[in-house]
Image 1 (cartoon, rainbow, N blue to C red):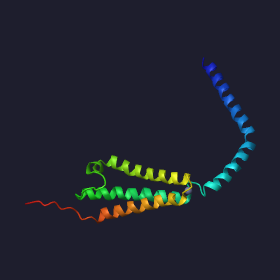
Image 2 (tube, rainbow, N blue to C red):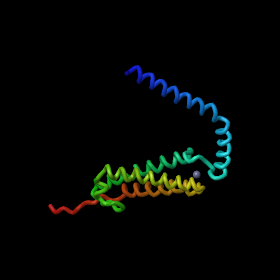
Image 3 (tube, rainbow, N blue to C red):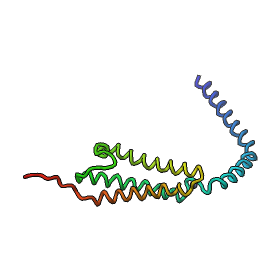
Image 4 (tube, helix red, strand yellow):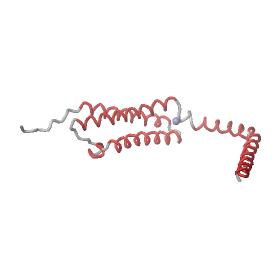
Length: 154
Ligand SMILES: [Zn+2]
């Protein structure tokens, strides 16, 4: 039984290898032709790859700004201040709040991708730059807010 399985497996892998070799041997010339056609049309519609160095930096910046915002908001809550954009309950649930911050970064990258896809490369970059600016400003503001001192009567 085991021998039969081994033979069947060998036969199957042999077939897969043969198929791979067959397609591998046949495709080089058509693929090369297709590739040149693709790069030509890509040069016309897209000026750069989506994951180029500039976008890598911008997305990393957005992620960092969102992280900065996350910690500044937790700091604000620890000092007794209230969250204004979300509710205190959401922010106090650290896992949910971290997920929201991560989703914000994801949505931003998605919007950039859509702009890139449809040839609006300036808007694509600006999405990240504006997001980075707003998130960083918000975080700095959070740290600058005065600590709430609830009136306690002794
Ligand atoms: Zn682009």
